[in-house]
Image (cartoon, rainbow, N blue to C red; front, top):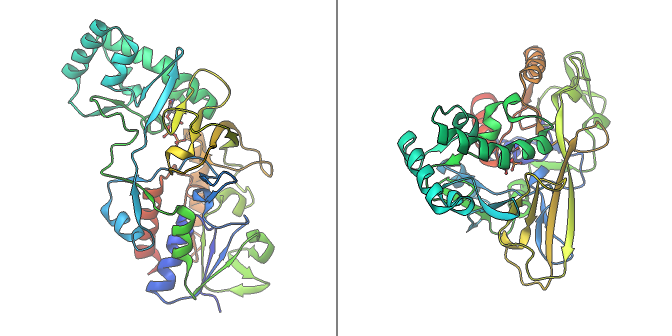
Length: 380
Ligand code: UDP
């Protein structure tokens, strides 16, 4: 007997399964299309014995102590502060753009003048989204905003999203704000760390419960059917709840049209060197077709004479051909999503959760927080 069906074994589905199994003592079936658990957090040791993130760099950071406490039931942690460089005009400089970057790109006198201007306009240690800085009326700040926009944002965003920063929800570029201070770290959160033995190990522990069964290599539609407002599992009507973490448009057979996503072609390479680059990630806003190179040895130190790097090539998502990674934030897409959401109200046994199902750009910590909240409010 199964009480809950969970579609997808990414963080959202896994947190939910763990809670239902341990707190409600109910039986859960997880249906997973891929041949592994963990969704896009999945990591594994490659042929160089280096722990790599199969679906791109996943760096855990949060200010939410509850999320840390919850996940600490399943993993120990290694402290890890992510740092990123951006290759601009033939030089690698610190990003998010901060006071250190000012001195890396401008002559000292110019950098000093700009630093003073920034300090007059903003609080020390504050974050200013680039689209906000672009609104400056001061001529020097306008110059700086244009410089940062042109060198760091406009071309990277064109590669990553096929759009201009101002045509998207400002929250996307605000993820990497201009930082009014000297912190070179990519994130400012109080907790920045990685599961000691990787995400897959942590997630396996979360799933290790007799109430949880997992079917890998199984498309939801192979064993489940949605007829009118009812779900059928292996041909019989299913009266429990379905927690769906896949694409909402696919579930409802594109009733209100396709929701666009951005995909990424992940190309891993082995380099016959101890290290390839100075930091874990180097962004290439203006050069090449990839957006960034990540070197996993910086993330999980390993004794190996070789190193594994990942180049990310963003691309359009095409159904059946590649993987949907990022929802695309425009008003038009949000309106389409809202139609699906309205339709969802007609179901009382279906919960949507996760980046794909909620059409939201969740970070891992937000995802755990959201799953715990949905469990408390809608499941328990
Ligand atoms: N971004 C940019 N240049 C950079 C880094 C980020 O233009 O060097 C913009 C770009 O639009 C990107 C967004 O900021 O999609 C968020 O960046 P983040 O590094 O958070 O992306 P993620 O790691 O989630 O792919």
